[in-house]
View 1 (cartoon, rainbow, N blue to C red):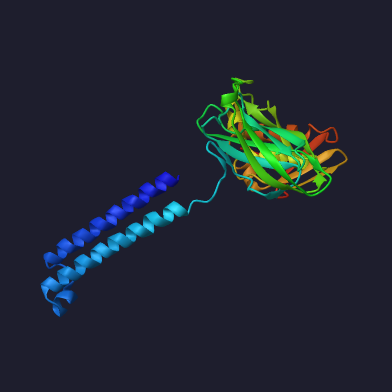
View 2 (spheres, rainbow, N blue to C red):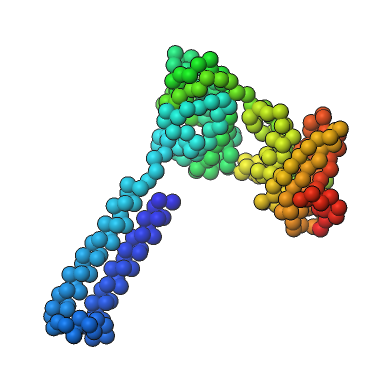
Length: 317
């Protein structure tokens, strides 16, 4: 992205220079700068315009290229590894969400993951670890990753996050490591697994309207499990899940207004986008995705949907 910006700015720099040259030529042709000609002779006007043009071109070049080189935001990581969600000496608590990308120099994806991370306390003891799971196509040059790291600490203390790459060969010279200092906050946090349901063209080649299949997600532990599962459903799919054949009928921009559970019935209200567009099969798939995502929990035996409080004539093509 930065290289593209530099190219665009350089093109603008050349354009400005070209325009100034044209203006000088136009002056010679007596088509512009009438006021200058009235107040000074031609030779003075030409010298003034030439000097002004040279100074302007130099200043434009300085404004374009000097700031561009120093305006880059610092990225946590090392060559081939960028950690987007953390900064050095940042305070962390459990569960810790970690996101980033890998892009060469020994950092790459393999079988859906890009490496692992461990958390060491101030005595060097490991108090947590997690797999860095790919969120984009792991066979691409640049691979996004995400994980939740769960740990417990009985006090505030300094610590280190140790990132290691994925190197299936097992050769020591292929190992890559990055150490990020952090401030560990006292406390404990847990994660839990929920399922969100989507259609799948690989498992169901006929693409039946009412057949949906589960993907498993890690989320911070909460008592509001139904809402957590719906939130994951509305987030949509990762690139890895899409490559596995999953797809969703729920439109982008869909949002949950409220959810309550009364005597085993989940009463769920969405915004109007949730029922917008699509034919009868799409509507059937949407209601199946929502219903199955909720009914994974034994406390829910039925689902009642509404759109901005309206229950009649909803999810119709």
